[in-house]
Image (cartoon, rainbow, N blue to C red; front, side, top):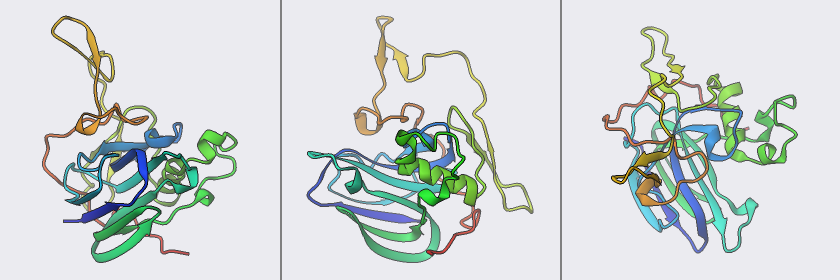
Length: 226
């Protein structure tokens, strides 16, 4: 089972999260560009953690991200995309984070993965967003389909093809997203993982009661470092 160990240095973070990526939405930036669920073990309060990546089933990739505070510096925000790689071990420094990988490896991506004619390419909120860059990498390099809106579900690979199919989440009864009724009939905002306020785009990420079950490690071909 893939494992990750994260040790946080002296920096403080407004947000620090690890997402199990299940799809992409190129029409949104920041965390919402990546469909998926957040690990319950990594938050802005984390100082050291060693975890198996088995919290949720059906993972295309993992994404580790932090937003610095006191002071906030865009260039100091850690970003690390990961894919399954049985037998691979590596330790690396991602700004203030010391990260040890076991059974996973980094996925290299840059803003060069975003086509010049892509919608929002001239919008600084998108063009400087590394979550959005990685979503484009998955779309244009790995062939992951763009699915706007709610988190997609992943169907098992079709026999003999080695490819999974991403489908939109089926429609359900009309509800107020991200809110639930309390006993008095009022509404209260749901908290994110570990009871903390959710980062942008996190409201759709609900825990799963299913056991761990990942897609094959070779679902997408790894692109070597240039």
